Length: 243
Image (tube, rainbow, N blue to C red):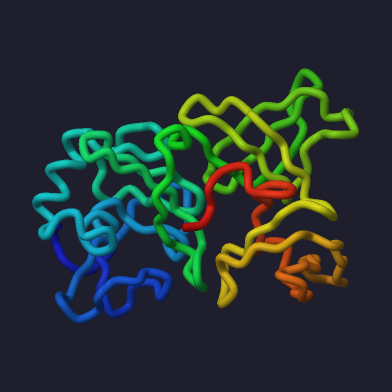
């Protein structure tokens, strides 16, 4: 792993609490490379394969498979064992016939569920930014760092911040657009209630703060910050998002 300490490695004891990994088996753990997700909401490939999925018993074994290009994230081979995998990313190892998606579950923002092979190239992404560009179009930024150019900003059904897109990966074709509005199905992805799904009843503006979303969850009412939910469908999720 190279020189210990500094920015090249991370002590297990101070790794993000969102990483459900053993803390005392060794002093160091891989620090993720800069990438599309913040460190507390993602994990490095090597840690996932060795410590979470337990596919390999040593870092050497995991690195060998990763460097060979046999591990794909969102349909692309990733040869960097530090590459961060996070919310809604798909992880596949075709040689092992293993296809997974990273979802929030049971108060954990990072959890991997098995998905059908037919879904490995599908991904739900949350819109986090939108701005005008030349030619009457606008650009959006998604939660995983993707930037996409969209036409028809004046269309009443145009995309808004907080909406979700179902896209194909890695080619980024938009398959569906789900608005963050009453009637949509939302999933909390951060905090003690990560993984809970509910139907949006209404969005409540807050003075000087992030709006709250009122959710109907199994007949009860729950509130969540709008920036902590991702829209996953209408009556049901567009793709598999829970075990």
